[in-house]
Amino acid sequence: MRDENCIFCKIANGEIPSRTIYEDDDFRIILDLNPATRGHALILSKNHYKNLYDMDDDMVSKVLPLAKKMVHHMQEKLKCDGFNLIQNNNEIAGQTVFHFHMHLIPRYKDDNQSFVMSPGNPEIIKDEDIDKVRDMLNS
Ligand code: AMP
Ligand code: ZN
Image 1 (cartoon, protein in one colour):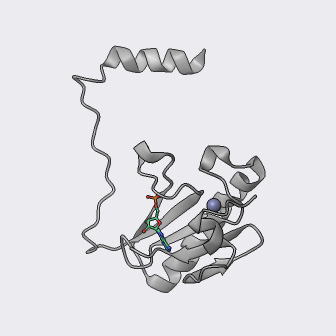
Image 2 (cartoon, rainbow, N blue to C red):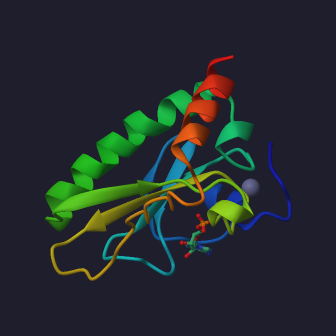
Image 3 (cartoon, rainbow, N blue to C red):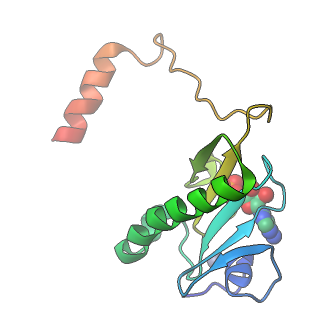
């Protein structure tokens, strides 16, 4: 389950060097090359999956426990004040490398970073439409 043209396949499987901070049979965790904050890390699957919904359920079920374990470790070592876990799927959502990864981004009181969502515009997304979406998703 590798894609010969995928850089994260090569990194996850050790063919390209990386700043690895954790490795097991299924995942490698590396430090991001362009960190959003100090300690910004990426969980990479060793198998090639385009994104979260391309992934086997068995693998999916291992990601959050691993993220939690790593967040505890990073919190203790880096003394950060919080974390953002970000996982982008498809270009429209900001994915630039099309191999599953989850960002572990430590946050610090003075890091000048922001991942805050802008609220929806009520002129565009009307209350009736929220009802409609609920009905669509419940049908
Ligand atoms: P995304 O926008 O969610 O696809 O995130 C891709 C992330 O991968 C970005 O934060 C990049 O800085 C990071 N990245 C790309 N190439 C490398 C690399 N060779 N080593 C480490 N991080 C990388
Ligand atoms: Zn890949």
